[in-house]
Every structure is written in structure tokens, then in C-alpha cells.
Image (cartoon, rainbow, N blue to C red):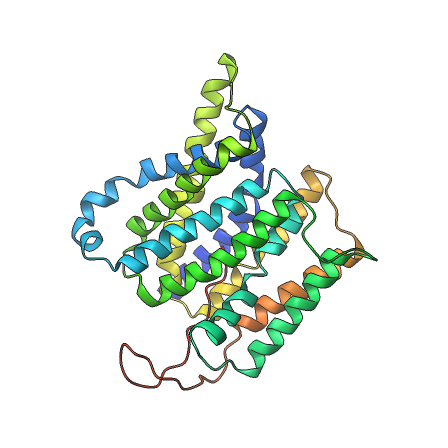
Length: 310
């Protein structure tokens, strides 16, 4: 079985897996760890599971680029907002607003990094902005996020775009320690947000074991295993394939939310969401590289495709 096939399967399963992530998040909240407290516990559990990687890759961590380390922690912070957002908004809209991040990635490449942007990427921006306007504007509303959860996903997608730019340009860490720093960034963000969103949790004595088990499993499987596996697989596939395979998250998130939470999208939200997905596909679609000068190498190289969100 070839490496490309295995890596593709990992990315596909990761997309499906994260499409189901809202289920344990809400289940843990129902047991008493509401708001950001649940995400904080989940990500601390993930960091605990990944802690042994620090000893194995100690030298790599000590020699790691500080900007790359900061980018990994910032990526975790963005994911924390995404995770918390599931408790304050509709699942499908949270996922779709998160997948708006390719628009931010293209704008960062053009206006902050000074790279020329191919026409296909311009089309991606146009599709994403139009989709956002239709999806959030509804029939006659204002095209802005309408709930705290939607704002968290929207801002989280923006932060994720900055983080992925830093990770692609400066991070050299292996998958396991990278996932550890990712989880630490998410945990710190969750702890900072937690007191402002919900009171300190009081968990019933009979629920404490169930909460502990769910927190450890969610942290180990989603934030530990799946993130580390995705980082390993993404290094072995072209960004276009990674981005397209991860689109399964949108489908499974929307379908499971409709089946298990009774959440449905309006016609305008479906049309707008489809344009946001089209934006993501156009953003990762292979194009002829535009020449630029890379200050690290002094030669012409096209801008890297932005990482699609898991």
C-alpha cells in the first residue's frame, strides 16, 4: 500500500472525524463543562497525551524557529475558538464560516507577503465573499455573523490563515511535538476565555468519571492523534488534495447536525455555503506558479498554497 494512498486516507478520515467533533464537545458541555471550560479540559488532556514527544524530540524543539513555534500555538488558539463556537451557534454555519479562511489566506499572500496572486485565487476570493454575503445576509438581513459562535468561527478562520502562513514558512517540527504546541496554544486560549463565558463548572459527583473519560478520549483522538496524523499526511501530499479531501468536514458536520441536533440551513445559507466551499476548492486548485523572489533562497518561487482547515 503506497504512502500517497495512506496519507490520502488519513486526510479523508480526519475531515470526517472533525465533522463529528461537535458531538463530544456538546456532550461534555451537557455534563457540566460548559463554554470554554470543556475545550480547555480537552486540549489539556491532549497536551498530556502528547507530552512524551517532548523527550523524544527535545533537540528539534530547542532548535525550532521561534516564529514557527508561535505560529503553531496561534493555530491552536484559532482551533480553540472554533471548538468553543459549537456551543454558541449552529454547527453547519460554524464549519462554513471556518472554511472561509482561504479568502484570508489569499489576501495575506497578496497584501502582507507581497506575492502576486493568480486569477484563479482572485476568483476564489470573489466566490467566498459572495457566499459570505448570501449566507449571512439571508433574505434581507445584514451580512454579519449573528451569534457569538459564528463570530468565533469567523475570527478563528482569520487567525488560522495567519497561523498557517507562519507554519508553512517557518515551522520545521515533527508532527507529535507540533501537535503538542498546537494543543498548548488552544488550552491557554480556552483558559483565558472561560471565566468570561460561563461560571466555574460544578460537575455532579455521579458525572465526574464520565466527564473525565470523554475529555481524555476527545483530547487524545481529535487533538492528539488526528492532528499529528494530519500533519504527517499533509507533508506527503500536494496542498490541493489535502484541501479537497478535508471538505468532507463540511458535509459530515452539516448532515450530523441535521440528524442529531435538528439543525437545518435556509435556502440562502445553503447557496452561500456552496459558494464558500467553491472558494475553498478554487483556492487549493493547482495553478501555474507565479514567480517571486524568496528572501530565504534568492530565487523565484511561487507562494505556497494556504493550508485548508481540518
